[in-house]
Length: 182
Image (cartoon, rainbow, N blue to C red; front, side):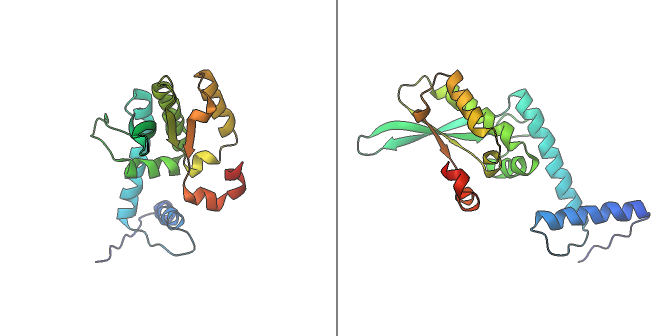
């Protein structure tokens, strides 16, 4: 069943067209998208989620869980990977596969990434020779001050840089091979 929406004013027609255009861009561009009220509802939910993330970061609702990295030959824990979680949200926990993409499209991924990096270094830095693994998104990697920021965090924590491992996605390697190499 197709929903037909008839705008009552020119201003409303432009607003609905902008919503459809944003959806077309979000889904890869170069195609036509008809306005559908479901698109607007999806965008409203995404904006609400972004506002919740900003508030949640300020309120300390995010946590890191640590997945152990085990050397099977020695049967010992040699590191830990930091995994972002949002358990203390007033409306209930949201899984990372929902909030991470929203953080990436909104630009909040840099703030979340810095939170994860600082917290992981603070939590695991004092633990012997443990390697600390933190994920970086493609959006974070684009930051021109990323390397300086990481060095500042490691330096402030007096953490030997070789204990920090940064994990990047394969997409990053394919889209920015020279930068990834550096």
